Length: 397
Image (tube, rainbow, N blue to C red):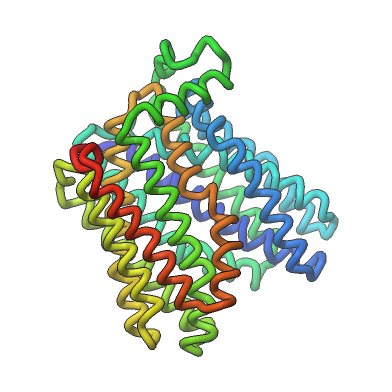
């Protein structure tokens, strides 16, 4: 698909970083439970990681624009290696303490806030404009693959060798990724003139917010992403386990089937979008995909058995994978090169920022009636689709 060695390096580095993320997630979860036996402690460690990631995401995007995505990725990956390798040694020596786990979790959150926008904004510097869909499709498909393979590999390492070696694998993944990013071509610093460059980092963050809000296409995309992911994360993260355990009586295997169906659908959608040219009107695609996903989520809560629910999730996942590829490519083309990092950071913030609220609200609704949760989440997405469809401006973008 690509004749470009830089893209191969980026793809490999991105895949290694995702695998490393899963190794650290599984290792930290298991380590906390070994040290404390407390789910509350585990939750607090995850919060310690999530808070700085959310709070600093926009700052990370501004830094990627200021330093270039390549330098930001190198700094983030190098810092991770420098901290995780000693942690692995402490765990292997049996000398690790909980305060060190909390500290490393905070650092992971900070590093993620800088690394993720840089990884998303570097692609337009690596491939030609007409290859953005193909590049994003390849990256998305590999992401879906690591979602399946990463936790499984990490689980095997933890079970057979212990958590210390899982952290060592995490460090190795990021060390290899660092070398691969180092091989990427150097690029001049993005031109920041006129975008708040004279007002320091805070001014650049504010300039990014103003830029995104002033562009009706980017603004609409961010609002739609926030609403759709709020509803979808609640339905998938809280509703699916409740359905599998309760309504369907299918247990952990049933949950795996449901999540796997969504993942397979998303992989098909992302892969297909890499080969099918994007539509001329992105706004109409956005409306159609919202309606598709919203309808699919609502159906999952209404069907009486595991198999039709999995089929509905698979179809909804196709739309999710396709819009992830088309949408990111559209945003990358539309965004001023000097604003790539900041806009991508806002995309991620819109996608992930409301997840804790979504989980909390969905838990309350699911406790009352899990079918109601899916219907409400699906309806919220459908209302968003209807609102976008009624806007002539949205239909024209």
